Image (cartoon, rainbow over all chains, first blue to last red; front, top):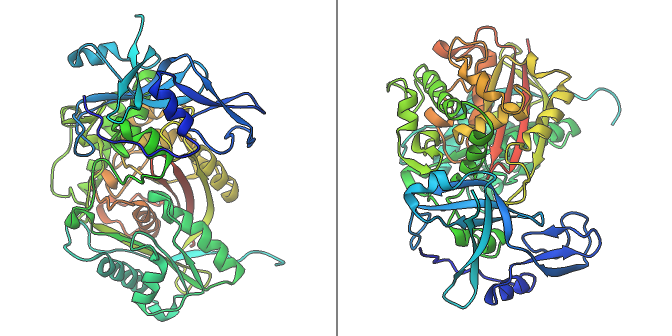
Length: 137
Length: 382
């Protein structure tokens, strides 16, 4: 598995990426409406408030939708792999990958509404990408 | 302004060369514009409004310079495939307010000749999507549509067969359209679609639109010379939903719900009053989601609608009568050609694929990753 694209972080997203260095998946939490959001912004996309903090989330969620990518989008990626919209238990949806024990069985192991749990994929610069594995049956 | 607003008509429509042209974008634009103006009995001297994109950073300016005109209205809004339906709304308002008198909406691309399309799309490194989505390696825009399709198959019985029927029906129409890229080929079977190479599951290469050169133009004005050939704009609406793959909560509810509602309300009609439907078919799933959002079917109901075969030539629900982006032409932003085909159907100019006595047509553009939605409703003027 290769992850050749190193994201360019900024002042708003720095706490997110800092968390990935210590195994914490962090989401922005709005101090005004108490809702989480992802991706991080300078304002709350639910209420427009600017009182935003960060909170560690559970890393538990479900697969909203998924697709097995059969061709690499650009040099450095090695298809096939499964990407998914993961709906975190705290509310936000994030894009990620789903790791399966065996690529050939992915179509039975991975389903919409399947429960998933967080794991980490180190990047070459010390940060990490949050990935998910199916849990339960 | 007081009194009744003037009516706005589409008085000219044309394609540029399609398929593999080995021509520049501006040469194709020049073809589209001059052909549409000739169709309207007008010339570039009559044009004082330009709406286009995809040429350069200053697209409308670039085209005005190329045509040798100094317009009083321009628009280069970039909304992907729905841009041209959005331009219709802008043009109608500019014409009604008197800002201009004659607007050309155009688009052309040489993407197949120039090999300018890539599976990963264009990555803009400063965007949130580059930070939070690109690292996982989605195909863009394909993987987003694929996830919507996966969700559709999860919720809707016979979803896979319905996706295939969208492509099969489009091919049947293309076989009747001499301008179609797949004209002169053969009918498709479900096995042809489902047995093609998977590219981002559950979508196969046969669920994806063509990559071709092509484009077209339409001419709008309030002054009608030939009422028999004029087509009236009676409704439009738009809705813009997302750039991120994670912003929309329910993948099966698109912005076409709102854009359609607005367009039908303005026209004062319902989906049952439409005779010809031209909706963006970037992928087979796009069509099912759009038909449901526009109210032609309930949630999950587009599967049953298309599986009856009604959307094919001769059926009671004529859909994507040119052969669509799937089998006719897809120059990257196909929305202009939805309008060209709608106009031609309402004029009765479509030969073997003509829908008998078509009086009202709907064109719906979808751009980006189900991001931008614009609905236009047209009616024969005579």
